[in-house]
Image (cartoon, rainbow, N blue to C red; front, top):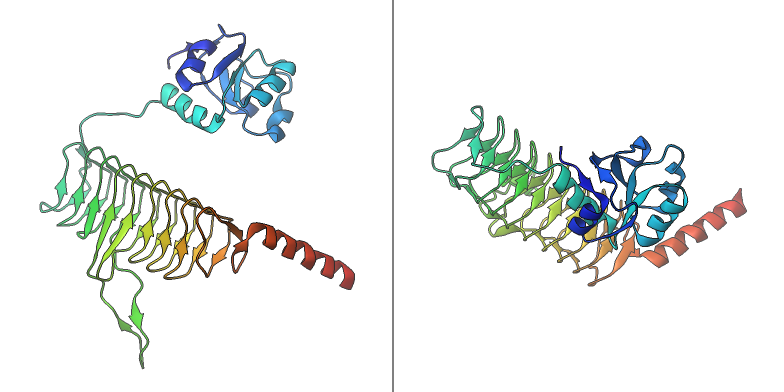
Length: 313
């Protein structure tokens, strides 16, 4: 693994070297490791308690936390306005991704009528059906399934056992059993999208399910038929989007958020984990609870309920 001075690392990640700028760093390590030859992320003040003897060789932190680390005996620091961005760049520097020609694992099942760019990599036991299109530099993990209705863009990552383009949950109530409504639409995954392990993106009923450029979808997320996920949106684990949901550009949905069908989450909105969204959320709104409501109102409601419980106890 390569080694760099703190000054060189700071220049690479867009931060400022502090303390012993010439100190040589050989890798990344968790703060708990207290590695003298590594740099460790210090992302929150609550982590400062880990700065005990022995201390790490360097930390990556906000300017305030970097100063605190130096006060507590850490030899060097990189002060960065956004340490998470700095951490991403450090990981790329110390652990670069393998790049090269495409490769299809011998156990993968790729239909001859699927269209794959030569640089696509397909993992073990993955399935790509006839009619599917997969763009440049895309990685399809082991066991993933890309159905024939799917068009996958460039530099997309599809995690192990994810399913792209299977039929959605569509049934007409009837007696004695519901009648299945076949889905004959498409799925479009634009460039630079990440889709986690065991996530599902259903095909449209008649139209298209769309995941726009740069969206990030965590493990075990369900994107229903005809839904649209905006550019750069973030969906944490176990989110569920019902059919025809719209998630705006840059919106962030916490873990286990559920959004009812035909609802809209505005651009830049924030939805707290485990919220149940039953109505539209305006651009830039922050909501929590079930049914989801403005976060401040939800916190007040929780506090009021707690006071009432104490009175009855």
